Length: 383
Image (cartoon, rainbow, N blue to C red; front, top):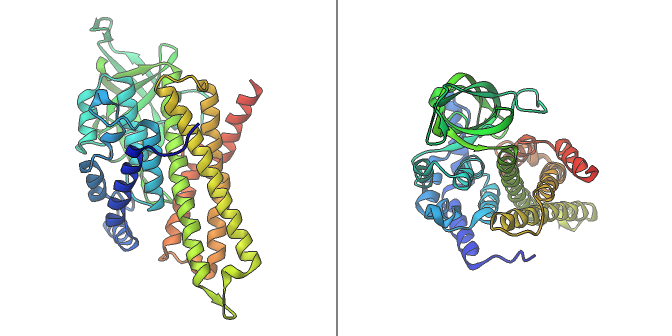
């Protein structure tokens, strides 16, 4: 297992870092937040920064060669998500790439939509969470006719509800998992046919609740059948969130190191105090553990996607759960330590660290808390 980046991966990160440095500085992000608050929307989407990434080929670089992409795959995705996390950028990396573009590329049949996403003309996301955290899908789909065309039913009718959908109020299409003929299936549904309730969340990113009441879609809306498809999409989204958390924690530690090295008490930098240096070191170790577990899971998932047999899908899911556990558990410790070592300025909402703290808490809660990941890991060990 080799975590060294390839030349193409290094080029991607250098490119993304330069774009985000130009577009996602603290002052500009603060301006976007104030603009969103003043407009009454509350949530923030940085359309110019996303357009810059798309135009530079950072999104298409992740797609397979069959979709005219650079084939950087899962490892490219986590590197992009990590870079966005370091800048706390308001970008749909998790929603549109992990939960949208890569599933569309994997399962096929929606080439025009995938091309539109890669060109920045449309946004796509997936609605994986349902109210009350049910143990099985409560959203259902049924055939709307008796005949079939080209292997598809005439159409489907979908009923159900989804909650906490990232970019659910901005995406042009939503991947909807639903129970069909006794098994899970995934449908591509236009947002225009769904009742959408925008949400204002801690991290200020766009989220929404969705209601589907007798929503009719054509037979071609069926993207994939089987629990494996739904699990794969969830795993990829979870991994991308862990990568974003890695970037958040890494940069929070860096901000703290710079602050404690310049903030003086009794004529000496507070970084020279043993209690401060020890807690900072613990935070650094926690951030590194998160990053390594995330990269390990990404390498395994990428290897499997390319036909490798290093680990089974169950083992990969368990490793992804481990990375997401650290995103919530260790990530929380890192961000609390960063705030505490800053003293009073650590809770100043105008200071950059505040954005990292609330974004980290948002990632912790999205697609499963640390406790839910422990349950997944425990179930794997029990098997």
